[in-house]
Image 1 (cartoon, helix red, strand yellow):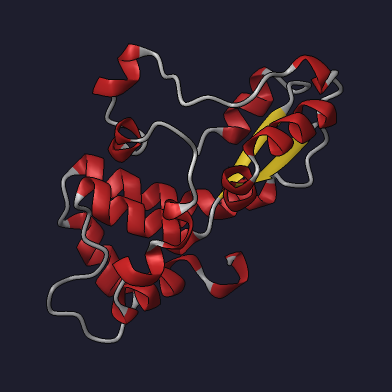
Image 2: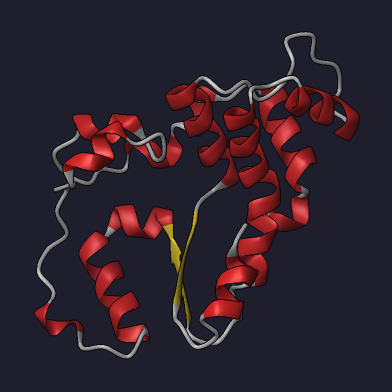
Length: 170
């Protein structure tokens, strides 16, 4: 949500955009943070239902849903920006070393000195309210998170996410 602001401060700075399947993002919000994706008394989704849901949530949860619904189109708009490298989460998980080297080369740097990707994290990330808390349980990159949405989300939740984001953004 701050891309335009960052562009105004650093117009020539490179961007790395990490794009992920919106259903996978929603499933992560649901399973990691307990964020409800539709009201319990769900009827066919409408924007007013989603608005009422968001307004009834605590601010930090509402901001997570806003990031998903408003942030995805903002990210998509920056894909064609000069000096922007787009990284698909699914490709990063499938081949982290290759994808990191591709991004570094795309930014104009020599990727030959890059060693393998590791799961080592600074200690301060363990207490962060951001990201996926489940990552601390893992010792290596794996692809379990790529398709979890297929079993984690109900049809009504997928429909609510599709309605909120809009099918063109998918």
